[in-house]
Image 1: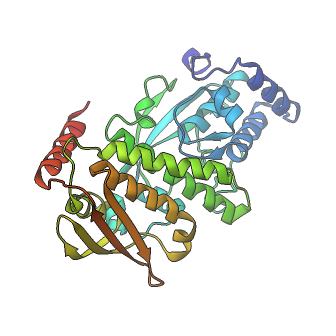
Image 2 (image 1 turned 180 degrees about the vertical axis):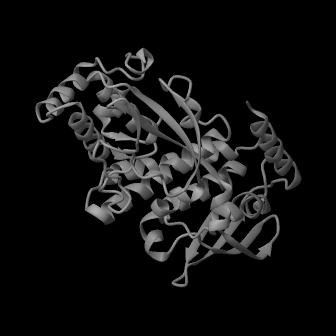
Image 3 (image 1 turned 30 degrees about the horizontal axis):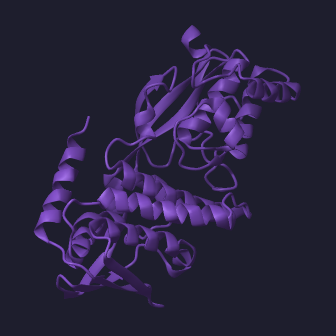
Length: 344
């Protein structure tokens, strides 16, 4: 049981800021059970859910932002500081778990194919391990944020597949927040997901975390990461981009790509977008930045434009202002993909 009480590098419950919060929670708690409940609600609603890298509990407290791992880590720290044994429980969820946040028009059958690793807290309350999921704050998901009375488990996640493992610490679990495969592209997508989450929280509760300056920086970062992810040694022509859209992105993102013109100097296609016009009104700049970054990675001289109609269909035109190959960059992209898939 000692393993579930100790301080670690990531679960740094002896940190001064954490101990101050412990004192605040303790002052309004009659016993350990009530303290655990107060700690649960504090983390649930004061640490806003975002896609974040793995960090110390004290850093999560300072940033006031976290994902399932870092929010659970802070809750574990608060419990251990009160001498309540706590551990981490990992679960497998289907990809549907993010669709209520991202509002993508993705077929459920496609979302079910993806698996997401979820982390929650277990606490020993009155000689019994209880499952506690504090990850979704009430401002983001008023109908999905869990309630807890300290006497039983919180509700099972609606997209739960199976339990995976238990751990006394998060050291070594960086793989769940720091991807080793397709890292630049996943980092770009994570930025877009955070923008989605911020808008969803704002729509639900009027709370916004990102300023206009933050958004401008994030949009530029999406472009740079996408460009780096798709950068090829051999410059590609206009057809390479539409090949990638059709082969790599259309199915998982629910895009319907209908090609109108297809040659090495100019490509035109219709894209039935994965989001509604309402969502596109605030996320369009992020999508455009991602698309342009992908195009510029293939060839810096490609000009990518997309005009979206009232029907939600984007009219995309890619013009090649430079020479470029078709087969060589495609082979390079495929080879990069194989190497990423083989990474361990």
